[in-house]
Length: 175
Ligand SMILES: [Zn+2]
Image (cartoon, rainbow, N blue to C red; front, top):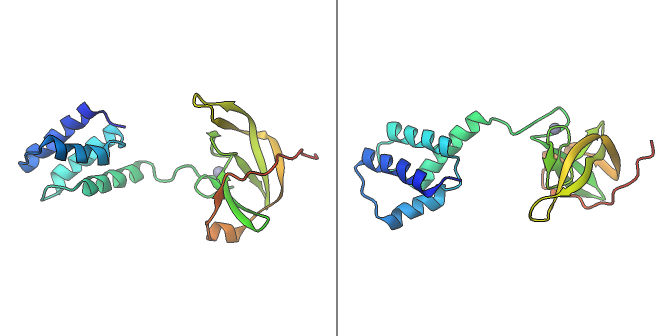
């Protein structure tokens, strides 16, 4: 999130470069489109636009430049050998699921799961409450509980039409 006054400063630079005068309503549209950006990275994106673009950019062009820079500096979210991009895909009762991987996500608002071979486990410790009352799950690979009937599926990973947040009962581990 970028503060309006910070945005104004960046936007002024952009206007200067392209010799553009914007009324507050127009500037507000740009702000609405870009207000979720990280300040430092938006600053870099606007620099890039100032240097590279011939014509006054649309909000979409600035956003595109921003996203390119963002993806460069954060190439893959978090990936480990047990998951795909931080998610474990599995099948259960004929449905596909994807939950955050407990190996590489420390906390999540969805239940964290772990994969051992083709078998899928819950791997989190008891929930704590966020300020808004919603639960938070903390990764705990020492508290693995098998999700009955859930099997890792290559087919699921190839066709990731998943249903996040499996709502299956927590089962007692037999080991
Ligand atoms: Zn992982």
